Image (cartoon, rainbow, N blue to C red; front, top):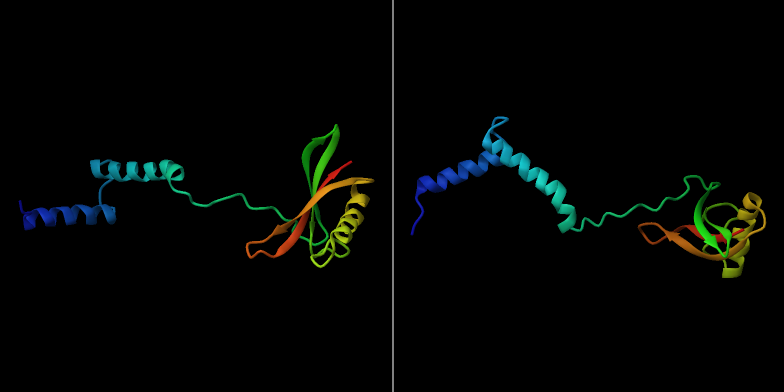
Length: 139
């Protein structure tokens, strides 16, 4: 079973016209192209892992502190305070754990009053550099 040159040429012309989108609006081939595009848009996120994840929000200014509600602990309100690592007087990478907790308290207590730190974690940028600290705080 061999293929004819005319058949090969017709298939090549068909694929070429699909690639260059040379069909008139409302024609069968135009509808096929639109359907293929819509199928890709709606079905590809279920099949292809595009590795898109929400971006971690970090305060823009070194003097800003982001506060997010984090539920309750034993009936007390819990919040996550995000403090930039370049904040003057704030937590630094070079500090020990107790020094970093004291620095977090120095930043948080003027905002919220007396609080208890549950735990804290560094926030890393895409290069693995510490840009901020998240502190889970109960008041």
